Length: 307
Image (cartoon, rainbow, N blue to C red; front, top):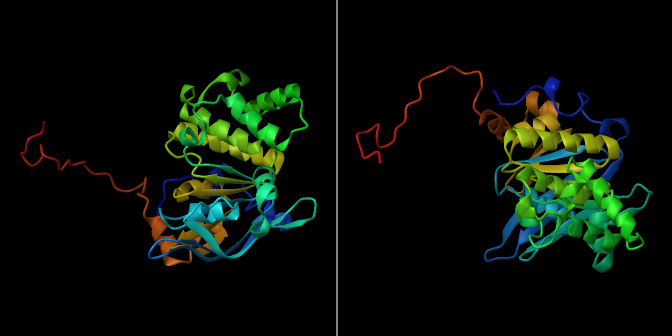
């Protein structure tokens, strides 16, 4: 088995299995969560999933497209849209102040406040997630005005500049619109918005999709540094298992709406137990295999029209 990634010695995160091991303090727990798409016939997208996210932990959700990763994450944050429905299960947020919040029971203003104040989301595809007719400043201020109405205009302006600096973007870009930013900058702005209220959990849905590897690695380093500085936990969703092996503390492998294996990244890498996990790891081509000549089998190779 060979995968195109560094070993754990070269991980972007710390060499320790996870900071969550020190205290085992949960920040978010899900028990027997089932999510269904109410179509004909119904699609059972998530089937009885249970998991615990610990403070300061990066928990990776991996699996092939359609396995239920994003649906589960949206369910944890109550962002499901019809025809999706949380059919059953419990989701509990364990606030740093000591209170337990029943996420499933939230509605109205309480739910809207929870989504950004306690748990925030970095959506897949920053170009589609950012409002194209509003500047970066306007979108950051919208979050602050809605959830921190006591802030003065000067305080909001200062916070907006601070947020961009945190993600490595010059505050001079506050007046820019989404189409004026590179893909990496747009993604950094999304992360800045998710951090605006200093949440305790950030859910990241394919945050580096469609970015080149250099930009991707830079953003991942920023995420790791911010996690270390502010102590928030991360649910990181991706189909890129080698990436998770570099940054995650634990990894949950999903297939057909179920978690088939959940363990530390080190254990997943060295001793995967489930056959599906083993197949995922072995599906990546080796960087150290035998070299051979590339043969193109298109029209020119077969004597056809090569126009």
